[in-house]
Image (cartoon, rainbow, N blue to C red; front, side, top):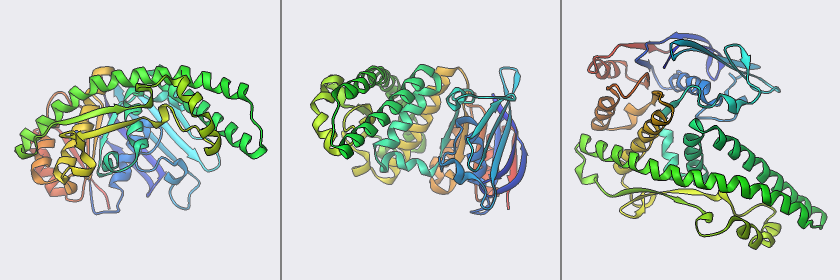
Length: 366
């Protein structure tokens, strides 16, 4: 599977652009601010129906314009797949596959598996639990449509329950029957998500540890070889969901939102049993994140039997020489498919890419 070509209109800083890609390695090079990351984000958009760097769709429209269009043609399973994504201000986003409009954007998820490695990934360590839940959910949902459906239903019911709690508070009333209706639905979807998240972590942690150790040995950073772990933190681990909702009802009424449940889950990233955010060195955190994203690649590849497209955004400027060389060496094997790279130094990029002995194309942006 690979992206053959893409057409971009009014997307971020692009007025109009067309690119025809190599099926192995493609490099966007140029100074900062010319749109290298935006080109990768357009590719990401075609897989995930939203941008990686800004999920607010309207903010991806070029300043001063009324719409954007991104279209791509893929080679997958010996046939062409055409994907169209467009948005007009004040209207709903439109995503088409081979000319047919999806009724729900979620139906498209998983058609074109893709993984991105970017400096923005640091937020997985530095930011709150919401980032890590989205990371976990995104991986599971890519190959499990029922999980994605249950997740969307859970979030919808959660929003409705929160609105009801606000309504009760504003009108100084309460209706236990209505609350019970929402509770019952949250419990059904929540328990399903809980079981699948538990299973995912068991499978994922082994893949992650293997990638982390490979990275450390390959870069020669043996002093960084510590005991790393990922664990699943959830209120349902030691509590029945119904009892949890019932015992926190008065608190929820005061707060006017649902304070317990699967939407409070988190992933704990540790090194030697301590938070990597608190004690991890910069080198340890970078290696942890690269291992995390490569494990994501491996997991998706195993589940879908497809090699995801891999985007490397600005990693050459943000990683030391050892890690860059090691990362290029890792992706230079048959386990990986098409690769997209953005970098500020054309000569540096091309020198590294030539060492792979793979076919490639360079795209100079200005």
